[in-house]
Structure formats: C-alpha cells, structure tokens
Length: 322
Image (tube, rainbow, N blue to C red):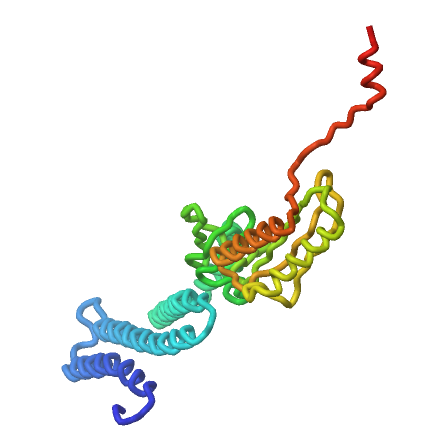
C-alpha cells in the first residue's frame, strides 16, 4: 500500500489494523475457552450463557472501535474539503458533525447490545419516543436554537470573523455552536447569542459589503453666487473622478436644496475598500480636498446662524416716543 499514490488505502489499513488485531485475539480466546469443554452449568450458574454474553459484548466493542476509525477517515476528507472551501463556518461544522456521528454510532451500538442481551428495545424506543416528546415540549427554546444552528450552517449568512449586527448586538463572530453563537462586541465584551434569534431577527453582515458608502450634505453660505456653486459642484466631482480609491460606477454630487441657513450640496459616493480604517482615511483625505477647494474658490462653509432685521420706521417711532 505504500507503493500506491493514493492516501485512502493507507487510511483504511490504519483503521483496520488495530480492530482486526483485537478481533483475532478475541476469536482466539473464545475458541480456546470452548476447547476446554467446560461444563454448561455449575450449580445455578449458566457458564455457556455467560461466556456467550462476554464474547458478544467484546465483539460489539471491537465493531464500535472499527466504526470510530472509519469516522476518523471521513473526518480527514471532510477537513480537507473545509480547508478548500471559502466559508469558515465549515471549520466549525465538521467537529460538530463528527461528534454527532459518534453519538449516533454509540446509541445504535447500545441498542444492538441490549437487543442481543434479551431486552425488548421496541418498547424501550417507544418509551423514549413519548419521553422525548415531553422533553421537547419542555425544552422548546433548546429545539428552536438547534433549528437556528441548522439555518446558520445551511444558509451561511455569515462566517467566523465577520462583522455582524443582530438586534441590538453588534460585533465580530468568534464561535458558532449547536445552541449559541459567540459575538465579540467592539468594547471587547463577549455576548452569547441564542441561535433562535437569528431566525426571528434580521442579520446585517457588514463584512459582506463590496464597498463603503460616503453620504452627507455640504452646506455653503447664502452669499455664494450661482457661478461659485456650480464651480464647487464641478470641483467635488473632479476630486472623485481623479481618485482611484473611489468607485466610479455610480456617484452623485448635486445642489439639492435651500436649507434653513445654507445652500446644501448632496454628496453620495463609495470607496472601493471595505476596510473600516482605510475607508476613514479616504474620507479624511476627501474632506480635506473639499476644504482646499472651498478656500481656492473663496467659498465659506455655512454654520447655524440667524439674521435679525430691524424695521427703520419702527425704530424712529421708538426714538420719538416719550
């Protein structure tokens, strides 16, 4: 098998080697004890039945050990597929899947042993079904969390390390389990979120953004002439056009409204980067260029103010009053 190019046969050999060794030893001991021709009963003790039950129990453990080794082979290939996939949720799903398979195998093995030892597993399963129904009714939250985890792993609305917001919780995903998901808030507090909340509440995945938006109003004073307003709008458009850090597929720079104390220019554009720190640096540079443009055009940025007009006639009447 070392001469072959595939890894599968080596894994199968390693999986078979130990269980097969134990099986040969078990068969050897069992045949050796049978060759002793021991009496079937010693007093009230049924020797044959005891030996048979010990052999059956040991054989069941060997088979379970072999199945566990097969599950390990499956795990190797699943981990390889998880590494090749882009989703980081697969890295969380594989260990949970392997544990579930092992629990299933152990459960079936116990049922097989009980059946061979003469227990009525049909009534046992029926009893467990009724008890499971009562347990499910008493643990509705746990069941809903389980379905929430299935939704997360199937739909993959986010991955490990993504910046998400669900309800009033916002932060980065650190761990996804069958019952809860751990989210690290930006104040470094760790929040454990029940998976059922992801079914009932919309999830905002900020890490899935393809670009970041810049959206604000620039207010200039009412004393600005029409020509200057046009030059300001054209200048801001030129800044965006000449900067490769902006997405040029769509942006808007428009003189949109007469505000309470300013002429408002609407600026709507996107940065190519989705990194928060980089987008803030681009926005800072953009703001400084706008300020420089306004200085060159001798245009002032408006601020909240009020102008009070005094009626001249009313002023004279007040002066003549006794």
